[in-house]
Amino acid sequence: MTYNEWLLKAIEVLNQINPTENGKVDALVLLQHATGKSRTQILAFDDTEIDEKVRLKLTALLDRRLKGEPIAYILGEKEFWSLPLNVSKGTLIPRPDTEILVEKALQIALEKLEENPPHFSILDLGTGTGAIALALSSELSPLCQKRQILLEIIGIDLMPDVVALAQSNAERNKLNVKFLQSRWFENITGQFDLIVSNPPYIDAQDEHLHQGDVRFEPLSALVANDAGYADLRHIIELAPSYLNSNGALLLEHGWQQGEKVRSIFQENHWEMVETVRDYGDNERVTLGFWKK
Ligand SMILES: C[S@@+](CC[C@H](N)C(=O)[O-])C[C@H]1O[C@@H](n2cnc3c(N)ncnc32)[C@H](O)[C@@H]1O
Image (cartoon, rainbow, N blue to C red; front, side, top):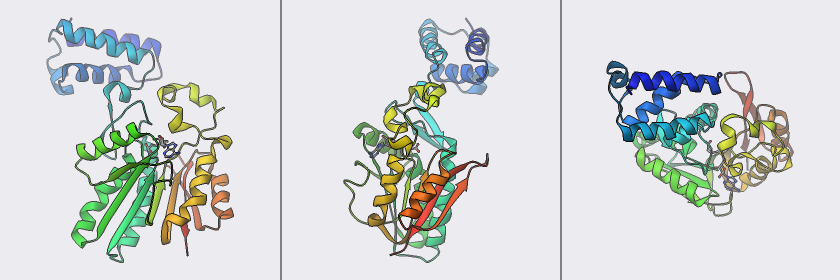
């Protein structure tokens, strides 16, 4: 069987089982992964015969995709903020939505860095693959180095294997972020200029948990008590003790949670509380500043 023959067959079955997904993209990505060839090499030499070992591997990969497993878990990686990140079933696959949080955090960080402080520190709670912390490090490290500002970025996660995953991503991308295990603030000492988090915020009863990619992701990364608000509330209540004066907390949340999250910030006496919308005009990130 040639590359082209396999592609045609794979696209047909993928489109039959899952007409809403892009079968052609998935089939090509799986073929690239199994053969180690680039997209161009595959398309330019599409009459190449696939050997038996690779064909068996392809059958197994296609079978996983046909069962709905996300491509990122099958490949073991996903790009976020142009950084290639290892992913595992222990945590969330980073989403493009989360780039909104990174953009807003960067805007605030850059304003604060204008004052040329001697050091600047960021804490990422529930870091998962390390996506947010690493994206911030990739942007801020060169600037801080140039201005001789000591930059410290720490990412924490509840799950030790997820902490190891984030560490592997720091090494893969040659970025200087410290990752440690902690249940939210439990193992944290010191104070930060920015705290960022994309915590679990889905209600355990939410029907979306049974649909699409989310079915394969761990509940520990998705679900929170109190209709999805327990972790958001916990972080909003505790963060002031871990922030420098005029420090900011930025939280990603569900598109229908903006109003309630703003009210939790306000009940806890945060200032300049605002919600940022994503490119689909949905409320996805709420932030506040803590004045001492
Ligand atoms: C929604 S995922 C976000 C992952 C990553 N920050 C991202 O945006 O792709 C939430 C993460 O929080 C972690 N987590 C859940 N409960 C936690 C807790 N009590 N303390 C620390 N981390 C926790 C999960 O293991 C998971 O990695």
